[in-house]
Image 1: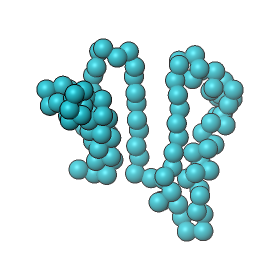
Image 2 (image 1 turned 180 degrees about the vertical axis):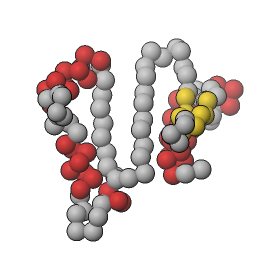
Image 3 (image 1 turned 135 degrees about the vertical axis):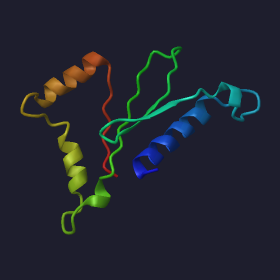
Image 4 (image 1 turned 30 degrees about the horizontal axis):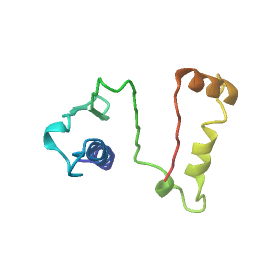
Length: 114
């Protein structure tokens, strides 16, 4: 299991444990923890899918094997600067247009390069 899929699995398990703890005992109730589907796409991306039709929310987390640990020597902080620039716009969309699109979708974009 590579680092990316390990991080996704740990995050999924932590969220499941927190959401499905037995209300009276505070312990995970195994029968309440839903099963998730694991698929590896043709490009090597691991997809973990946990469906809960009772909750009308979509949560998408993308994790890449990169970030500040991959900053070149002498260019520490490059990943953080790059992540902060993602909100500043692109050739096709200004920062304001991106913000408006996210608002329209009711989306929340969190960026981190740790």
